[in-house]
Length: 174
Image (tube, rainbow, N blue to C red; front, side):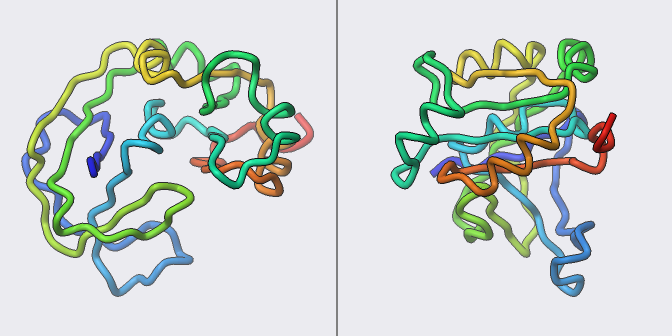
């Protein structure tokens, strides 16, 4: 299994465990976060870009496949707000890969893994074209004015999903 950390920071030599910023997580455990290869496309966006990401899996119904997935051969979609598209075009990311031995599964649906030990990446790849990187992974990028309707719908579907940085999304009703 391959695990990654995506960052806008170049030349990170060591990932030190940190207290999670999410208040719903144990604030006494310092963690290094990683994402599995299947869910990696969910993080091929600028760091604070709000996004709704979803993919089909063994539990996905035909109704949900028809409703949420286009006729393209992709079964994974990343949806961002229109106002983030230019930032997406101009952002460079660094994809750090870890040895997975010291990580354990944190959230299967989102593809999150964590380690309580410092981690030294085994490789780093620079990504200059985020849209191309998604396309190369057979992931469809969609843009919308507001993410909130999709946010509310997808979490009640049979799709695998992840919703990131929603605090930066256009407020509801705009």
